[in-house]
Picture 1 (tube, rainbow, N blue to C red):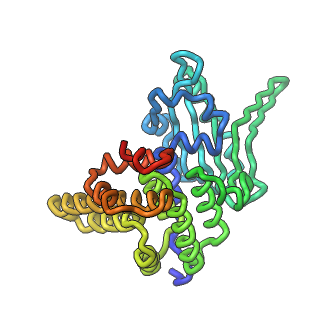
Picture 2: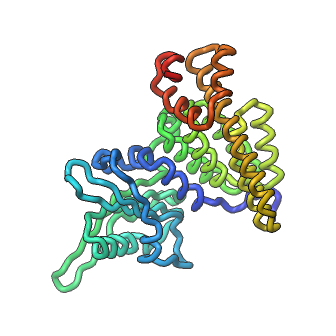
Picture 3: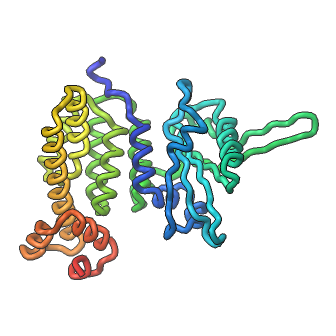
Length: 328
């Protein structure tokens, strides 16, 4: 492989995970009308297996992610709504027809309302296939779906100023399209995006999801990945933020070598401890940014907290007006 080129982007794993992790935020950012129609106090169910049964994976498919989600339609009693989400990574002339095929098969199979959402994350400004039509001897069928083109959905300035996790996810994907596969430029851009992530003061779970996404989209050669991690350590960033790449490589190596069960458990336990410590460090950093100096009493309280308490405190800091409200 050319030393100047990065490994292929793992966009499938990146988008798949972040959509599941932050599903309400995904809809609120890209499809606000759909977001407002959903009752999120009710169960949200991802129907991955059902989708795969109806649509076996095709070797020729260019899509990155397709998902089927069952939600409760707000204001319509027990009515359930099926949401088909497709994230498309390259121009494909068959895309509009495929979206229609998904729609009618899902409606026929479940006999429930279906809405189709498409997010285009490709680099071609001309690719905008939101409509499919078919007309035969006076019979005409027109199918439209909700479509967002990432290239021009928001400007770079708007993405940097927007506090939504998916504003940053969009910026990461957009920057990757700009940089391409040049490894050196990608390293500098990945460091820039990591710094942007740390400055935003997200809750710990959002940080982990976004960092995992960054790790998938901006994949570096091993030597540059180590340089990226060392940069974060030198800048005193939290352990949690770079744990995902370390964890993934360790697990990949372990599976390839047939690692013994006892060692696997030890790795998992170590990772869990590292994540818990990283969560505490992230929370203290957020407190310091929002309220100023962090006292020894607060520092001791955070480090004594378990992972569930740290998660709760991390969520409360988003709306807390005083430090005491975080620990109430």
